[in-house]
Image (tube, rainbow, N blue to C red; front, side, top):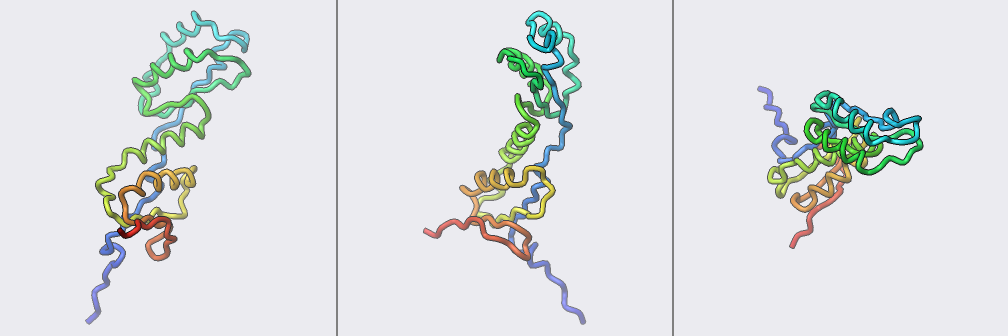
Length: 170
């Protein structure tokens, strides 16, 4: 009679975290203020406000949005604020700046949504070999978020981990 195979990893109480869980799953969109500049140099308030009024903001529903200006122009701060006020109604998140900043903000938001109760005194393994575009950033952010509540954080796979943090015994 064959002996039953026991999944020791499953029974170990290890909590596996896959970085793919923190990959933005919203569409990425971009609003480039350069397209709104008069002669490619200046933002005219009246024309800008007309664009804001007529623009279909609903197309940003369930997206993450980068707001930028690719032209070498000085854009008044209020322009970004007005666009942001519109995006707050529809977009999952938005940022003034680079696409990288937008994706990192999205990752941070997902990490901040973690229910820390599930990790209380846990043994956490952050899965290695990820295709996550900002894995170093995401891993460091996870350590920052989880360290105050877990017993240990490891990196890798259950069969081969690298210790990252272990709570000191008191």
